[in-house]
Length: 449
Image (cartoon, rainbow, N blue to C red; front, side, top):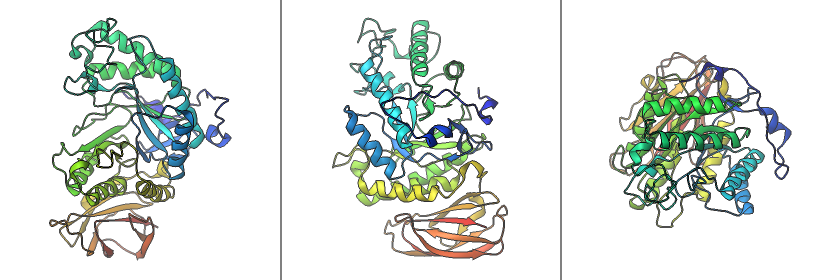
């Protein structure tokens, strides 16, 4: 299903709106590709890129100044990525085969403004939750036009007909849907990837044929991916893999348990040789304390890249007592900025990392150690899984048995809340035992010759 031309640089056609000028620097970068190592992402001109951001699954905001203000705010805090759905109550296709031009122009505007602010979009073309009967945004939603019970131009009374390709009225209608979207938006450089399906329940045949269909339409060869619901190995089916974690899978509402499950899923998906980025994820925030929500956010912000993920988890901050959903608080935006500032110091397109979890450990059994690296650098994340959830300051010794990194090297320990380097150590040989500065719930290490 995947094609080798992702390792080539193809200069595409650029669509520019006179209402939203784009800097020449942004234009010259070109489109986003999978890098030559198949580990991270890069632009046509070789500039590296790592997605840092979250789900803005629906822009409830309709006025352009508000959308502009949000993108400006996010980009100023280092956010360079959002994921947007074309479905789930915001579907521009209603009835089937008719596309609401007001909603289509809203996506035009978002993509144009994202080009201006350097924010890249994973555009999700279908939400498989529309096949569900038991949710308000599902099969019985008022805008689920494919349901004949909702609209006479629908294709079927049975959502099962949309899972595969055998029900030709449904399959042909979805082919037309994707054709309209790809033809309209393929020239945007702010489009990071076509996200074919959210919460996919599609058959293997559907995924393969739709991948080929979108690939044949897109003369600019954007990255193509999709997202399983959760807990499923993406198996290298498309150009990059995506993994998730939720309070219902793996089950529970403990931030350390959930972070460890996410990290293990990244490692599982990496074996297929594609970049792996973290998709959606959340705790049941209505049942969690603010400190638990904070720990989950920070673990899945910093920890993911230490196991080899191309970017952070797109954590839903929902539902909370304050009702903030899906956007982030100012404090969370500050944490994004700290993380983004660190990520800007790495040339991800040249970082041919391998997972090294088995090569690192800590003297304190409650501290889990994670790492990935190559000859030029090593990323380490230490997660304190305090069995009593007290999180008093803890000291530990890090055992490094890595054999890939050039020596000597400098180890910078980074506070995950401030992004500041709090300790610098020199490593002259491996195996090495390193005294870790005191921390509470998590700490990040960066080694570089």
